[in-house]
Length: 96
Image 1 (cartoon, rainbow, N blue to C red):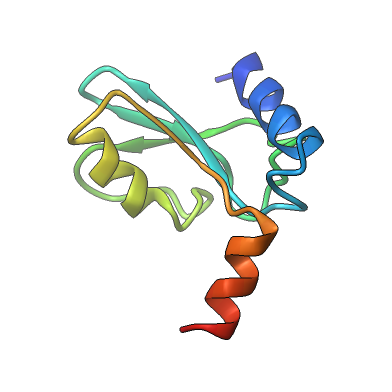
Image 2 (image 1 turned 90 degrees about the vertical axis):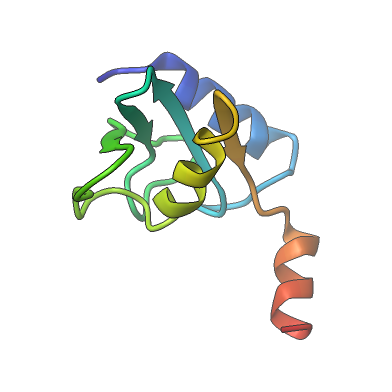
């Protein structure tokens, strides 16, 4: 699935300084079936082809490990974008 929004949103998060490198995640829901999520280790500004994750059952190994968070969000709402800005990462490292 090619989705131009993945790259557009990822580039915007990066250009605004909200993320750096591959911190953060993007997914797009596909009805009640599941959602497409960024590949594990992919950069937000060049995410490549997203991976389909079903709402229930096995998950492809190429999918981001954050799929669990996105599943939980999709059970309550139709959208999810998650980013980890640098101050948040610093705080989570120094304050477990």
